[in-house]
Image 1 (cartoon, rainbow, N blue to C red):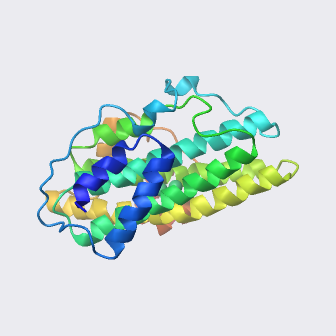
Image 2: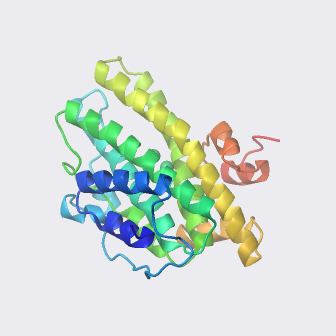
Length: 275
Ligand SMILES: [Fe+2]
Ligand SMILES: [Fe+2]
């Protein structure tokens, strides 16, 4: 089994079922070390012009994605779970693309991102099961392609990919998810709400490790390119101008455990929140 060629097929897989089924077989082979050597990639990476979910999801600008107004209603719960399921599905591709795109990296790099892909698949499947319980399915609502855009815009640089994807976008998820859990916990508890809370708790706990892996490989890329880790803010600003201008409520413990320094946290929160 050729490692990079198989990853390309997984990235292009046209349905969640096919992507997940094929990944499980590939990952099993990979863990048994049955895949072709990583040292001699025979296969050139390609740029993707559209996301793999294009055949079953209607893609719209972010402001047109259905809002989750009332989380007590089934409709609101579906909107929330669909939005998170879409993030997880996009995150499967982001993890696979990291392993696919960046060549001649240490073995641990490929181990890390395939493990992340495996986690993202589990997260997606948990949410997909909840969507089914709510009478919906992935692809039922419109989605945006912001994560796919980040994937393509950073395809040229490991440094930029690690700064923007795990260390910015996934780290933002560490901040946002506990706030959603908090909102849900204030509602009258139903079995659906409890199920959603449990899934989100598992996700946020496991995302810390993804951001931490991103932090490690961002540090590695900084060393390779001879730049300081403080270049993080400049890199992210290039993709998301003025994003650090306003104070934000952050997950201090989660971000610290993921490798953010106190100085970085102060800069992000605009407050002296740790030492
Ligand atoms: Fe995830
Ligand atoms: Fe993740």
